[in-house]
Length: 192
Image (tube, rainbow, N blue to C red; front, side, top):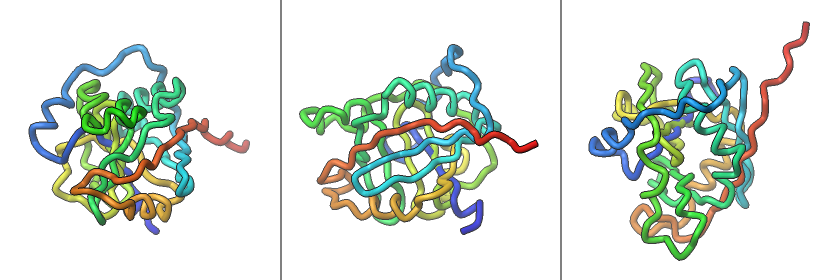
């Protein structure tokens, strides 16, 4: 699989619609540490694990927010609450930790970051975010270019992402909980 085919878009948002773009324009947090190139996030689920290679050179604010949230345990116990068959999986809403708040899934953790647009295509495996929620593209999504920030790519485990995309849905809401745990892995040391 080529690098372009694995791009991962993490999106903090409800739906892929223009009104959401405005919600993603809030100022980014200045307190997070810079993320080193090569940093990865390992996402563990009951369906398996996948690894996201973060792209701080493309979206430094988004990678900082993602790493800070993950290290604080902010993604642990959240679910992939929205699934568009063959299109995207979306998760990371802090409200999804509580099954009693299912009607509110998709509304938490939004509007935390200013968009960091790039000319990278929203290709299969793309990851985008404007807050705590994120989505991963199952197939290329050219219509998303200029609407969301790409800050990572699936480095391994795309077959797990595809398995998650097969979760039964009601409309686009997952009918079963696919919880995640996210661990940050620093870049591998460079050999001399």
